[in-house]
Amino acid sequence: MSEVFATTGTIAAIATAVVPQQGSVGIVRVSGSQAMALAQTLFHSPGGQVWETHRILYGYIRHPQTQQLVDEGLLLIMKAPRSYTREDVVEFHCHGGIMAVQQVLQLCLENGARLAQPGEFTLRAFLNGRLDLTQAEGIADLVGARSPQAAQTALAGLQGKLAHPIRQLRANCLDILAEIEARIDFEEDLTPLDDKVIISEIEKIAAEITRLLETKDKGELLRTGLKVAIVGRPNVGKSSLLNAWSQSDRAIVTDLPGTTRDVVESHLVVGGIPIQVLDTAGIRETTDQVEKIGVERSRRAANAADLVLLTIDASDGWTEGDREIYEQVEHRPLILVINKIDLLEESERKIIQSQIPNPKSKIVTAAAKNQGIDTLETAILEIVKAGKVQAADMDLAINQRQAAALTQAKISLEQVQATITQQLPLDFWTIDLRGAIQALGEITGEEVTESVLDIIFSRFCIGK
Figure 1 (cartoon, rainbow, N blue to C red):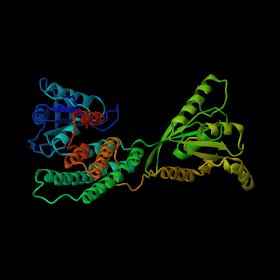
Figure 2 (cartoon, one colour):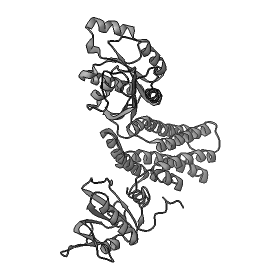
Figure 3 (cartoon, rainbow, N blue to C red):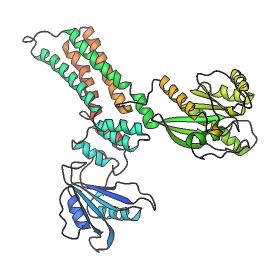
Figure 4 (cartoon, rainbow, N blue to C red):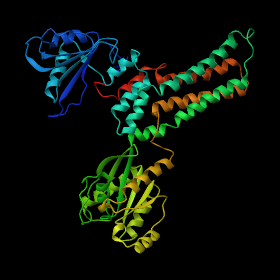
């Protein structure tokens, strides 16, 4: 049995981020049959406070042998089954920082608890029937959410909005299987199955699976975000564009070409989509060894990005350097940004735009004056939508594991249809139908293996 799957004993872990000299409160969480006994050993509550479930006690945490004071804090009591894990749970609410929570955790480990594995509290909640796997994964997504929309989608999973349709699909498959097996066992006593009705029911299930599969790209976009690289010649306003877009001074801006020597990063949210923006060094031929390294990193960033913003200087026109960079990135998803447009008269603007290649998306900006940012964000969202990836108004979004299981279920159902069409015996119908039922059960946890649990919960942080 794997380490993650072995959930015996009482476990303890720090349940809050530990940051030096920061944070007002730190929490040490304990779960298991000995949680209450451990709390009574370490926590001293003055004034005859009542130790009841779902009460908060005030007091002191002391070393049980030396009686040395470790911290002043609160104790939260949650007795089974009314707790996150459906076990007895206590939480020591200590002062924040490093030392207090570390010392309290060490006392817990010295007095019968063991350090929790990553995700073990949530794993226990799943094994004890409080959560299904989709809800557990929703918790992980909520912790890691990088935008309000991602958080809302994670909450939808936590509330069971994905589990409900999956369970219904599995129930429908089980109903079909029951009908088929009844004909196998009691063929003489029941009317024959209508092949067309069975195929129609399977097609309805497959159509719903297809609808769920269409949310995979949306989910991935919300979870991982979009990587956008700003590239171009030196001094075309790439850093000014980043600063205007992020409303900060993340990048140094000067009139000297080659100021940016390395990739500068900023994180934004556009239309609910987390975006990692990379301001790269100006791409040009140079003998400066440090700048040459920056140029090479810029090329790598452009090739690794989901979207490239090729920025040019409108006052320079379309140069040979711009053309060379364009040829390097035109195969990538691309927005051509004509910057410094405020330096040109209206007639000059029309001339410069006529000289420039016409990619699928082209916008104008005056980054130094914070102009054109809304247009840029609109262009990005249009490209996202053109890829049939819409981030807004989603009730749910599946992850890669869930998509793989749904895909397997769909393949199995297609095989059932083929078996029926070929007029093979009823026993053959049940083989792939059981495969679809198992695949759907893997999503919510009705059908689960240790290796699947290892993969899911090892990605959690310790203490969750």
